[in-house]
Length: 44
Image (tube, rainbow, N blue to C red; front, side, top):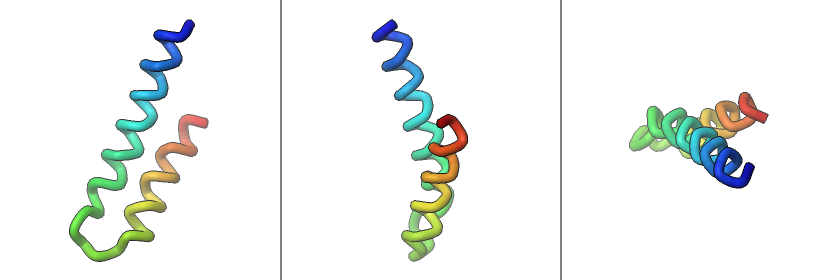
């Protein structure tokens, strides 16, 4: 069970990072953070 949980945690974290990455360098930290949080909440 621990391995499955670790893999799921990695998958969710990666999805959130990729969602925020789309906003990288645009000077809008809040939108980048919001996109990452929204993606992370999708898996909750």
